[in-house]
Length: 397
Image (cartoon, rainbow, N blue to C red; front, side, top):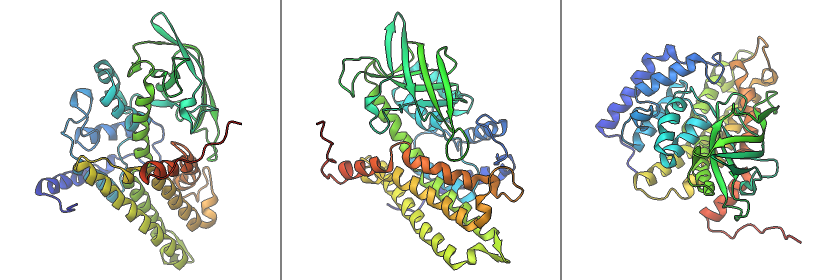
């Protein structure tokens, strides 16, 4: 593709950079913790008002309302990567549910749910995985039966991120017990304050309870709170999963993380010498830089196909696997470069970057599994992208 920007796109790039630079002092930092911290929400509002977040979401639903332009989206992503400023809010509600709602939701759902979600005022969690249904999601066992105007849900979900903080959940339940495995599943939207929901935190390797178990006991959800047709939720779920893979493998987010690592290695010293001048660490950094460039190039391949209205194909299939593994490798080099300081946790006075490198290093191991394990992603790439034979299935006998 032609990488030169038109005059219009160059002017747009200058606008984005000017807005970010002039509002740098308003950006949230690692000290502003919490999904609904006022500083984070104010930053999100500022970005939306200036067309830097939710740019193509219709104004009627709380977005900026600009026409779709793939190059503008790339310019915005590159601006955040180059400036190092906090990106727009990205979470299960904003990055996964909102685009699904805009594509498949009813007008009432769009009017009531999109605006507060985009602005960070309504937090969502995802009710997909179950103790016996992770990679084989279609085998889920959480069930719902109809009682009058309600679905009555019973079952369990696991690895539910942000369940304790969430206001709402988008949840897969089996509503037609006799239907084939990929049929009979419905996609429901309901409040986490609904009676009958119990949440139990699960502590992960970071030492924090980033995941949860969620139990449903006779949870009543109005039948109108469904996205898509009853029993056809698998198609809706796959639309959401597509957006999840894009969120987890965002090349611009990976580049921004890499640039933070570069800054760390220039700033930190051992015996008066910057880490950047350590030949072993610098060699590892250059190897990661090459992978970051490759990921950026693959992102351009996806963009090119989108501009041509062509199926994304193989470039899109590798995004999640490539991004999650590379993000973890970047955090690993940061930990190694910091030496004994990389082992610190908590509120130690020598802790660097508020402990974010330690947290990312441990948490990203989970993301290599979450959203489709690396092994499952490789199967998808080989079967759907390369046309190789399907992996042999174990015999039932």
